[in-house]
Image 1 (cartoon, one colour):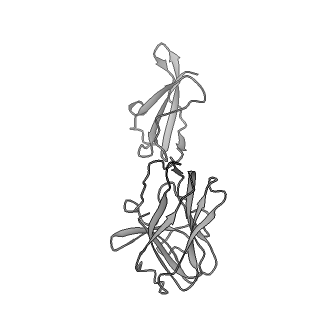
Image 2 (image 1 turned 30 degrees about the vertical axis):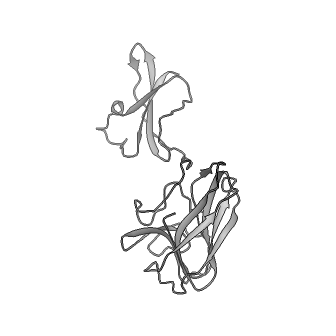
Image 3 (image 1 turned 45 degrees about the horizontal axis):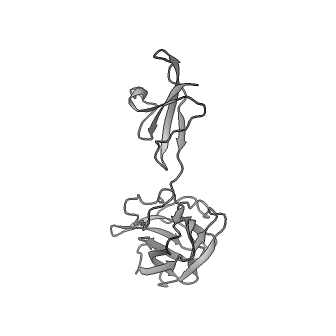
Amino acid sequence: DAGEIAFAPTDFNPNDPSCDWTDITMASVTTNPATLNVLTAATTYYARVRANCGGGDYSEWSTATLSFTTACADITTLPWTENFESLSTNTVPTCWDNTASTAQEITSHPDYIWGVYENSSNKMIRMHNYLVHEGTALINTQTITLPSSEDYELTFDYSHRADCDAFTVKISTDGGANFTDLQQYTSTSTSYNYTEPGTFTAATVSLAGYTGDIILQFFSNDPEMNNLLDVI
């Protein structure tokens, strides 16, 4: 079972004949399956394998190229912040999850789904809905580990422009299987023009009593609104 694994992140093109697999990262292995401990979290890799035949001889590299993505790392260093400025519009932060929303595509008019939005050179995440009266938009953070040594709080800036209802901040302590409401936020303006974010309001949510792994969720199912979050 002795052999070598060559692996590279997605900026390496495995279909380019000029790419030399011996020039990228390699690891010698003696078991099958093998464990690699030098990979970066939330990263897609390509990999090939070859056998170590002994005496300095090796087989050819496997013709099939494996592709796999490493798991997201938990947030363990606090305080932690996300201001969305490094992200492309119509995306979500790496390791955040909005797939349980009614819509599945983030566009310039994202009905019932959260995505990165830019206004006046400032980026934020937005869930805009206009004249689509049924649906749910939610987005979950990656797992955050809260030490038991002290109490923590969630702070963020929000603009909830709607003519009714509220959006809700929720928390899960069981890996996202169930969520509990932490706080609801009613509209800051009855004008829900999607072309401008309006005035942001600072919010603080106590996480006192919560320890260990949590996931935070921003949830909305209002019939007409423009929800925006910045600097979490």
